[in-house]
Image (cartoon, rainbow, N blue to C red):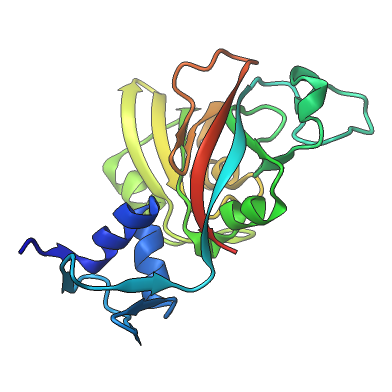
Length: 230
């Protein structure tokens, strides 16, 4: 009889990430054979029965939009600048954006009709990973990179951002940031603390959704089965 870890079995069954499954188990939201189980890495088999509190599978329409630079993530702007909804058909203007990208940033921006799903995707406790490619100018060495991967204290506290050096050419570098919080201007503020000037910031993924080949300024509609804790 094949054995599998509890968290892996849960993630496969409900089509959620391993991190989401582990968090649900640790937060006492899952029962195993009728009892609450908080150990995500114990072995289970097909004969074991588990259930998840308040977890529902829903069909959702998700809009994946390649936000260009020079527009506001908002439904209106007092300065009469372009907003993200200017690029979308009117039928999507009642959708809610998930997370923000600032005026000078580009990349993947998600939209949904479901406010509960928006809230779930944005909450830090949901542990949803966002990945960014960031072009910077300035000096980088291994010590600086190591410091950028620790808890950072600035005007706000940033919890151990995952930062990797993708490419380097003299004082021009490409960094990959993996974040789970999404605080206001988090990447730009972190780079400023380390004397790095951001030239370009592009979000390439949000959870399981990828920017891939969506054209700059264009969008794609998807119907997906999403399981999430309300």
